Amino acid sequence: MMHESVARALNEQINKELFSAYLYLSMASWCDAEGYPGSAHWMQIQVKEELFHASLFHGYLLQRDVPVVLEAIGKPEAEFDDLNGVFSAALAHEQKISASINEIYRIAREEVDPMTETRLHWFINEQVEEEQNARDILDKIKLAGAQPAGLLLLDNELAARPEPTLTPPSFAG
Image 1 (cartoon, helix red, strand yellow):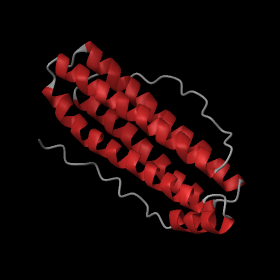
Image 2 (cartoon, helix red, strand yellow):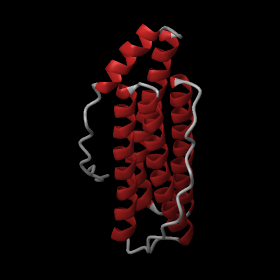
Image 3 (cartoon, rainbow, N blue to C red):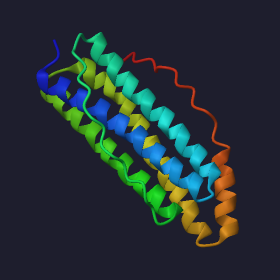
């Protein structure tokens, strides 16, 4: 049986993942409106990944026979100064998500829930990738500076991001 504190944290994480999707959708809308279709495409893929993450947490709770409790999703930020502001906000958000997953891991360890600890390994590794992706894009924005040509090249690069494969990972130990 899953300890109540672990169940509560996992349910809260579903909400955080759904908010992440909502935030990235808002960022995609900003990018489209500001003439960055490649960045909008990149953000739309993030939306899909975040919804997938929420579904993985949801499915795990159901597998463990734990009730899923969905809460209201907050209103995401919608105004950004520039593309740097969008990706800076994305990185800051991913860092918050990483901290949240690390906290769930801590709680699972404290409550001696090795099944949840094992499940969280995939998410921990995923967060390393999520943060690195945002940092890499921020580095390229910094290199481009305020040069429209540089930002256009970056936007074209982001447009080439492939659709995610969204296959549930194998959670074998």
